[in-house]
Length: 114
Image (cartoon, rainbow, N blue to C red; front, side, top):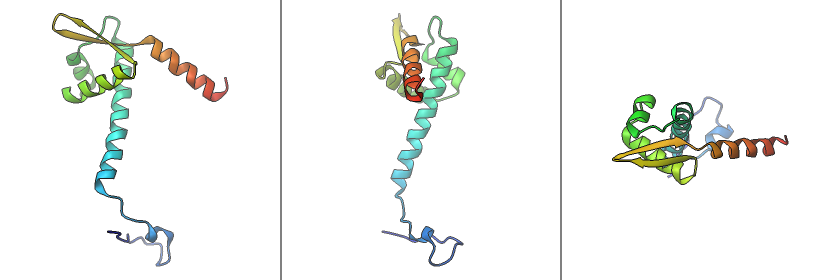
């Protein structure tokens, strides 16, 4: 269903011809933005605090994100080769990969023509 939106710009306004965006698409966009911001925050935490690695509990306490959100983001970052994980007994220690930072800096330099 296409619904017209009422804007105070007049009847022939370009804004009134826009169509409705389904809620599930809007929710998906918002979730993607939030995941990206959370991933950036977790990477910053790991970069500053991970000489020996941090557990999920450490990251949860520092970030104030939920445990399940941290686990999901860490799995994505590990898959993207930006975070390394090692087992120490029952604990999993996560640390920032220095090589990932070097690769990001080089790609930004190449993009800017430096």
